Image (cartoon, rainbow, N blue to C red):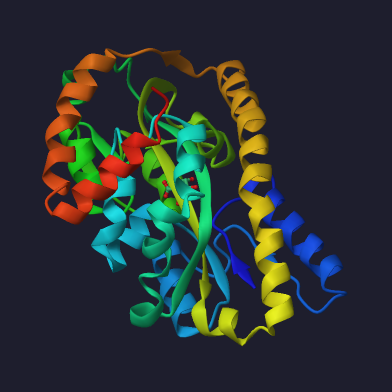
Length: 301
Ligand code: GCU
């Protein structure tokens, strides 16, 4: 049983369903993964708890939720940490960088991080626009995930950050409780935010990351042979997902434009400058700085 907050058309659903089918075949039906989409098992914050308790086996949760159970995950949530999806994939598949991080909440929370799935580039979108520089966001209530890094990030970008769970955003945009939100093009379209926030500013302030987490006791209870097959099949998932992601992002942006969304570039330097203090604020221990530098070393020169 795997909990997902996305629709059946989303690349994460497609890649994880495929993972379940491949696993079923490779283990002669001993293992399978059933994906429950659309937050049917609960919002991400709640479901993360349920996976730790063993009531739900696995879930897709964003880095911002992991940050709430261990501050060690904050570095990967920082704007400017990751340049693009390829950089992100190199980092999350590098055992030397993320190995300890991914097992660090096993004893404390009974959660094993299997790996990462990209959320691609995130942009700001608003009901009124265009947004070109940070001052254009002044006074606007922009939804963020429940994360101190992201609250600081959006405040630094000039807006008033409003934390809220994913499933509530559409209604809040529609009723005017929010002036905008920030997300990738795929979520913008699959959550129908294009109908209620028609200006998209390509801020590209963050390459977001989701994690697939599993109850540690469940993983360890698998017979050795099955655990090995499970881990081999898992290796294929994030690349399959990234391939789907690139194609689906292009489609989403084209569909957004067709539906009337006005898309504009921004003053990148001004946003980068505004975000610098946020990065500095969260690199407050030698370990965090070390992790950040290891991530940056994986960037393309
Ligand atoms: C992305 C991400 C989700 C997250 C969402 C959000 O869509 O894939 O895991 O919930 O952003 O902004 O809350």
